[in-house]
Amino acid sequence: MDLNLDGKKVVVTGGSRGLGRAIAEQFLAEGAEVSTCARGEAGLAQALDEMRAAGGKVHGAALDVRDAAAFRAWIDRAGAEMSGIDILVSNVSTRLQGTDEAWWRDSFETDFLQHARAAEQALPFLKKSKAPSIVFISSIAAVLTNLPPDELAYGVMKAGLVNYAGQLSARLSRDAIRVNVVSPGPIHFEGGTWDAIRKANPKLFEAAARLPQLGRHGTPEEVAKSAVFLASPAS
Image (tube, rainbow, N blue to C red; front, side):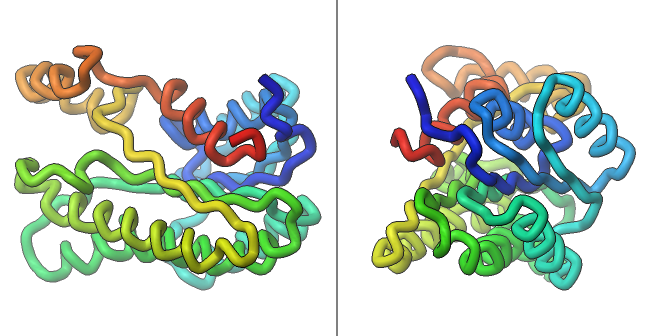
């Protein structure tokens, strides 16, 4: 199937590894131009080198999405560098540790506010696109009520993200900007959260593998295919 992504300008946050990298690579394979960011400079540089070596037209910058000024400036820079933004995939996420109010504030910044910030900053570019769309990466934690204690704030923020995306979809329909959410279950990849759990708590890792109907953890590539299809004009 031709997803009509050839030449499209795409911003993917958190593209140095895991879901973000798989999504970026899938867009590149479809002929899109991609701009991505990540917090770790060395990891991002390696990822960019490898994607370019595979023939992808990709740009990137190391930054913390919680730094509002730097994040907004990067999205503007990405739009200028690519001469537009057709698609935004807001992917960055984490599971912060804590129990106090500071933990809640940090979780809000990391797992909700930066997604809204990305959408708002990309909007002027998206309104000029002929095939604009936004995809947010949420989690099944948004609807689960039996979560580990350290995922309490994470689940709340992911639920808020789903609600925000729904409101944004209704509001932006007048501009023909489509908004979708992908909510993965447990995804395993080397160096990721579930890889660390596999080593530290094998019983929890195995229990999480029994949650999906397939009886196993998902892969970044499986999620990427869904996200890229939903972002594409073909959907």
